[in-house]
Length: 116
Image (cartoon, rainbow, N blue to C red; front, side, top):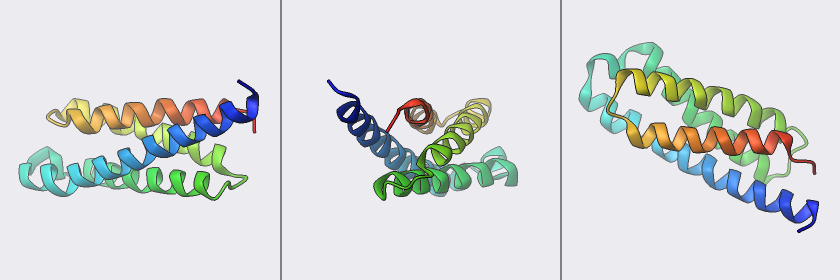
């Protein structure tokens, strides 16, 4: 498999992971967290989940448009997803969100290192 094919496949996988994470974080925040209340709706946590959803959508958009800045956005996306993982694990009850964020962070980290 040549480098260009690998790059395209890695980007497609990353776009998919970012879109899934965006959907999962948004749904978890708007449904589970709002219903659960307490720590789930504290400003710091809720803001982080919304930021995570937003950066995942942005990362997917930058990759879809083949932006020259997609690697930088992927790097920030991975950092935010990793922070979201830690916060969601600490509070608990958001396993689907944790898994989506872990997968997205891993995929984004791979994209940062892929040569185009």
